[in-house]
Image (cartoon, rainbow, N blue to C red; front, side, top):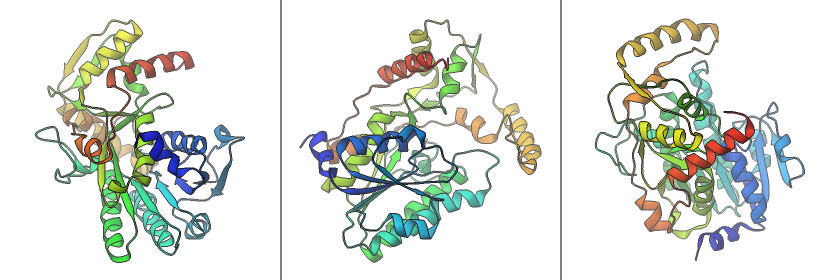
Length: 339
């Protein structure tokens, strides 16, 4: 069967999405509505759901780790897409990552295990559980080496889900996205803006391989993992066909924007020191530091993975090339006045 045939199996099914007001979750929500699923979503009371006005979505307004809300939201549900994530900001307390990533997974899975109609739990993790790839490309069997609290709690949730499934028979699949981009994304917008600077700075002398995934491809893969028989009990890295050096990424964006590009390499060491000082001073004050270690470390790591497993097991191939996706995203940013 082709992708659309698989996704059509979700038509009329009761599905629950967490993190639905985020970038990836919002695209997934709308896609599930288009497919014809009966869609539920959990969102914080403070979340803006106006982008979904008029869509047939049943909202449960609560934190994703609140057990009472989870119990209600999972009643008679057949599929769960657990997309929710604590947005990576230096001022967020470590416990919040644990609540959003680990506690929510536990409460959702335990509630689903009591439901005789339940079909599959799709858990969205991150490529970051593998950390830096010494000899790229890595794959799903690469060693785990999470580098921060976001990645560590994502990995903890993965391990817990596997153990729980082994004990209780809960059907699941795990998706590990590479770096998500596409129209609507704000996280990588800063890279596009940097392309228009007089100089495009890259810290250190490494390749700085970056593996991207277009949000449209990612949400297709997430939905496919819910219904494909070969996805059961498996983890899949989802990304564009191959990684790209940051400098090449900047060149593509600059070409699309018709702007000159001059890449300059800067020693990375002093920036680690400056980042540590910024975090030390800002975090106790609850202020987002202008520079922090995770952002500096980005330039010292290579993230490059083989996506052969999802291609071979689920017959899934990204529709967007990195070149086409970056150009589409750049044009969208310009149209929105963001660039």
